[in-house]
Image (cartoon, rainbow, N blue to C red; front, side):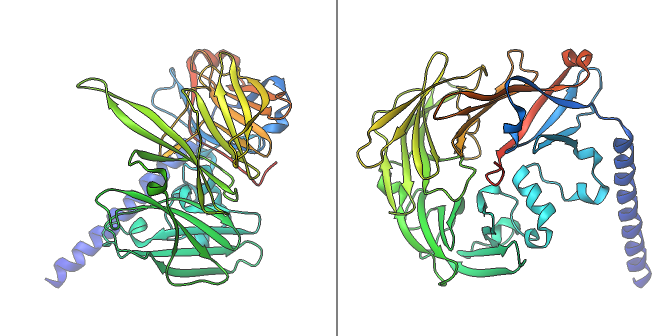
Length: 403
């Protein structure tokens, strides 16, 4: 029996070494394979404005077989995942925010969920909210939440164990916002209800308690059980959280469509829900610098209004012409909306693809003057290969700490 045990251990070690060597061999082959050089082609404006844009994409060459290298755009520069060291590739995450946090704060990120919706980052701090079941799937739900905050300068980390007021069999952290030291958490649970409801909770990082304080039951305030989307706001220090409700309509035995039923904003300061009246097809709701904006689709772009949250009066800022064919079509996935269009620091960012769908297209506009600050595409430097090569964006975000 002892001999058999030693044999099994030896076999396991040999198998482990074989797997590592195989992975390292594949890495060496990929690392030696020259990757196509990428460039930003400027059609209008200046490329200096693309600094906040961070994305990952697959480069697919119809003549290159099944080799789909992963390209990264970060602060205006292109690199490839395949060019990273073997060990750094092991920790790679396809979300630009999470990948950057892992690179810069590896110790802090250890044991945490790789979901960007559970993080909020400022110039001084990184905040994380999670539960045990986020990283340990077999763990039964204990209703306990973990809140961690990292001081970037001192590298000091504080961790708090807190619980929800009511027990539930389902908890989903939808968003984390911070006006340091105050936190606002959006959590979907089935506590005290037969259906999933979304609640807003608050937590004070400098005066912590062992129970999260419920500020608002968003589902009850909105008054519908339609699915609740959260606006894709990249700056998690904003005062407002934009919300959208939608329901499914069965179109046929094999398909369905989604109908938007309402737009709302949650004010983290007053803890009130603001309902957007008079919306119709093609409406967008944005937030930037503690201000709400309403966008309305037009034939050539989007009309942008500043919204007074007290009386719902809209002030027209102007119309922004969009040169990207599919930028007006709203993208909603991962429980969020406004994936392909958002406002950050007074600029409207939009992305999509060229007419033939082969190249990512980017546009940045000043919301006050409606001037195009940048219009352009991501292409190969070797123009001869552009016809046989396409670039597909798989993850995109705006870095609010880069202007």
